Length: 143
Image 1 (cartoon, one colour):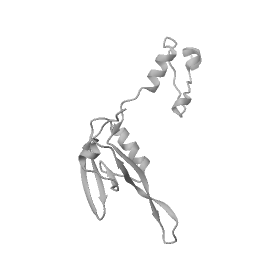
Image 2 (image 1 turned 120 degrees about the vertical axis):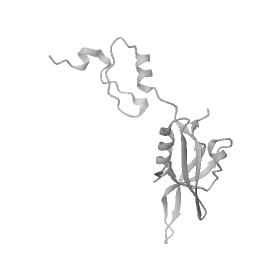
Image 3 (image 1 turned 60 degrees about the vertical axis):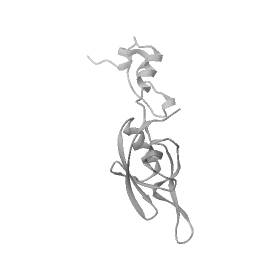
Image 4 (image 1 turned 45 degrees about the horizontal axis):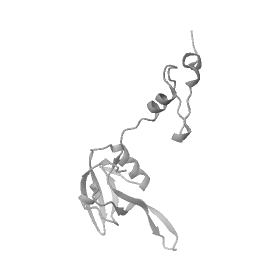
Protein backbone atom coordinates (compact mmCIF):
# COMPACT_ATOMS: atom_id res chain seq x y z
CA UNK A 1 0.00 0.00 0.00
CA UNK A 2 1.48 3.36 -1.03
CA UNK A 3 1.06 6.47 1.12
CA UNK A 4 1.68 10.06 0.18
CA UNK A 5 4.24 11.85 2.35
CA UNK A 6 1.59 14.35 3.46
CA UNK A 7 -0.62 11.53 4.76
CA UNK A 8 2.25 10.11 6.82
CA UNK A 9 3.90 13.29 8.01
CA UNK A 10 1.19 15.94 7.83
CA UNK A 11 1.71 19.46 6.54
CA UNK A 12 5.50 19.51 7.03
CA UNK A 13 6.16 17.31 3.98
CA UNK A 14 7.90 19.27 1.26
CA UNK A 15 9.11 22.02 3.60
CA UNK A 16 10.64 24.93 1.65
CA UNK A 17 12.93 27.36 3.41
CA UNK A 18 13.29 30.66 1.54
CA UNK A 19 15.93 31.93 3.97
CA UNK A 20 18.37 29.32 2.68
CA UNK A 21 17.85 30.57 -0.88
CA UNK A 22 17.48 26.97 -1.99
CA UNK A 23 14.54 24.62 -2.15
CA UNK A 24 14.70 22.03 0.58
CA UNK A 25 12.44 19.05 0.31
CA UNK A 26 12.14 16.82 3.29
CA UNK A 27 9.59 15.09 5.49
CA UNK A 28 9.60 15.53 9.26
CA UNK A 29 7.46 13.49 11.64
CA UNK A 30 4.54 15.46 13.11
CA UNK A 31 5.97 14.98 16.60
CA UNK A 32 8.77 17.43 15.72
CA UNK A 33 7.79 21.07 16.31
CA UNK A 34 8.55 23.87 13.83
CA UNK A 35 11.55 25.26 15.76
CA UNK A 36 13.16 21.85 16.04
CA UNK A 37 12.53 21.27 12.31
CA UNK A 38 14.31 24.53 11.44
CA UNK A 39 17.22 23.59 13.70
CA UNK A 40 17.55 20.13 12.14
CA UNK A 41 17.42 21.44 8.56
CA UNK A 42 19.67 24.46 9.06
CA UNK A 43 22.32 22.89 11.35
CA UNK A 44 25.78 23.60 10.00
CA UNK A 45 29.28 22.79 11.04
CA UNK A 46 31.58 25.79 11.59
CA UNK A 47 33.29 26.80 8.36
CA UNK A 48 37.03 27.12 7.84
CA UNK A 49 38.60 30.57 7.62
CA UNK A 50 42.18 31.76 7.29
CA UNK A 51 41.90 35.55 7.27
CA UNK A 52 42.26 37.03 3.78
CA UNK A 53 40.06 39.22 1.65
CA UNK A 54 40.24 38.33 -2.03
CA UNK A 55 38.98 39.48 -5.40
CA UNK A 56 39.42 38.12 -8.88
CA UNK A 57 42.40 39.82 -10.48
CA UNK A 58 41.47 42.48 -13.05
CA UNK A 59 43.67 42.62 -16.13
CA UNK A 60 43.72 44.76 -19.27
CA UNK A 61 43.94 43.27 -22.75
CA UNK A 62 45.93 44.83 -25.62
CA UNK A 63 43.00 47.16 -26.43
CA UNK A 64 42.66 48.39 -22.86
CA UNK A 65 39.51 46.36 -22.12
CA UNK A 66 39.23 45.07 -18.56
CA UNK A 67 38.75 41.37 -17.86
CA UNK A 68 39.17 39.19 -14.79
CA UNK A 69 42.00 36.69 -14.60
CA UNK A 70 41.22 33.29 -13.18
CA UNK A 71 43.26 33.63 -9.99
CA UNK A 72 42.15 35.47 -6.83
CA UNK A 73 44.41 38.23 -5.56
CA UNK A 74 44.72 38.99 -1.83
CA UNK A 75 43.41 42.51 -1.17
CA UNK A 76 43.79 42.43 2.65
CA UNK A 77 45.09 40.15 5.40
CA UNK A 78 43.47 40.22 8.84
CA UNK A 79 46.02 40.82 11.59
CA UNK A 80 46.56 37.85 13.88
CA UNK A 81 44.89 35.48 11.38
CA UNK A 82 46.40 32.18 10.18
CA UNK A 83 47.18 33.92 6.86
CA UNK A 84 49.10 36.70 8.63
CA UNK A 85 51.06 34.17 10.70
CA UNK A 86 51.90 32.24 7.50
CA UNK A 87 53.28 35.39 5.85
CA UNK A 88 50.58 35.92 3.20
CA UNK A 89 50.61 39.54 2.02
CA UNK A 90 48.42 41.95 0.10
CA UNK A 91 48.96 41.41 -3.63
CA UNK A 92 49.72 37.69 -3.36
CA UNK A 93 47.90 35.57 -5.93
CA UNK A 94 46.52 32.25 -4.67
CA UNK A 95 47.02 29.56 -7.31
CA UNK A 96 46.11 26.42 -5.33
CA UNK A 97 44.31 25.52 -2.12
CA UNK A 98 45.51 22.19 -0.73
CA UNK A 99 46.51 21.00 -4.21
CA UNK A 100 43.28 22.11 -5.91
CA UNK A 101 43.75 24.70 -8.68
CA UNK A 102 41.78 27.88 -8.02
CA UNK A 103 39.86 29.26 -10.97
CA UNK A 104 38.20 32.22 -9.22
CA UNK A 105 37.74 33.90 -5.84
CA UNK A 106 34.39 32.21 -5.17
CA UNK A 107 35.98 28.76 -5.57
CA UNK A 108 38.62 29.66 -2.98
CA UNK A 109 35.93 30.85 -0.55
CA UNK A 110 34.02 27.59 -1.05
CA UNK A 111 37.10 25.38 -0.57
CA UNK A 112 38.13 27.26 2.58
CA UNK A 113 34.66 27.12 4.12
CA UNK A 114 34.27 23.42 3.35
CA UNK A 115 37.72 22.52 4.66
CA UNK A 116 36.28 22.92 8.14
CA UNK A 117 37.92 24.20 11.29
CA UNK A 118 41.34 22.91 12.35
CA UNK A 119 42.35 21.63 8.90
CA UNK A 120 46.01 22.03 7.98
CA UNK A 121 46.12 23.25 4.34
CA UNK A 122 48.81 24.26 1.88
CA UNK A 123 48.36 27.33 -0.30
CA UNK A 124 50.42 27.75 -3.45
CA UNK A 125 51.04 31.50 -3.93
CA UNK A 126 52.57 33.75 -6.51
CA UNK A 127 54.28 36.95 -5.34
CA UNK A 128 55.85 38.94 -8.15
CA UNK A 129 57.82 36.47 -10.26
CA UNK A 130 58.24 33.90 -7.47
CA UNK A 131 55.95 31.05 -6.42
CA UNK A 132 55.92 29.43 -2.99
CA UNK A 133 53.88 27.13 -0.75
CA UNK A 134 52.70 28.18 2.70
CA UNK A 135 51.00 25.96 5.25
CA UNK A 136 48.39 27.14 7.72
CA UNK A 137 45.56 25.77 9.84
CA UNK A 138 42.00 27.00 9.29
CA UNK A 139 40.05 28.37 12.24
CA UNK A 140 36.45 29.40 12.87
CA UNK A 141 35.84 32.94 11.65
CA UNK A 142 35.81 35.36 14.59
CA UNK A 143 32.58 37.29 15.22
